[in-house]
Image (cartoon, rainbow, N blue to C red):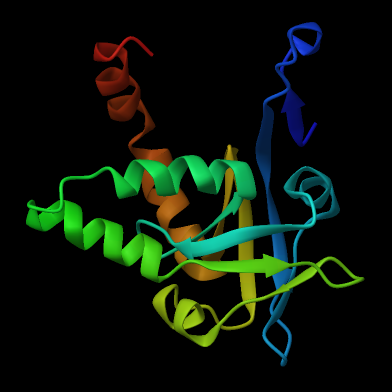
Length: 159
């Protein structure tokens, strides 16, 4: 199953959860097909921006509004807060889907994430990440080796 919808629809709560890992290619016109299983829940469009670890993040519009609100509330007097808000907000772009479910990835975002042709799109609960395929493979191998240590640290946080 590639997504999960909350079990409380009778309360009006239908949080979509994006999960899974998909390999796609960026074509010569800088278009990237978003997996059909994700497109329905992204609606008519989404917001793409820089992510952490040199990947890109795609937010459904509502999730982006929540994120932008949080970024807008960061204290402008703190250097790190200003820098993070600038990177995320200035790098953001609204994207729509063409008839084949593709989005246009702007050059500045392709450069940021080192995207060439082969990419991996991952579902991460309320957002998607887009990675250059080789970088994703390296990241995943390293994370898989450290999963025990990560689980111990997260256990301290109650997870």
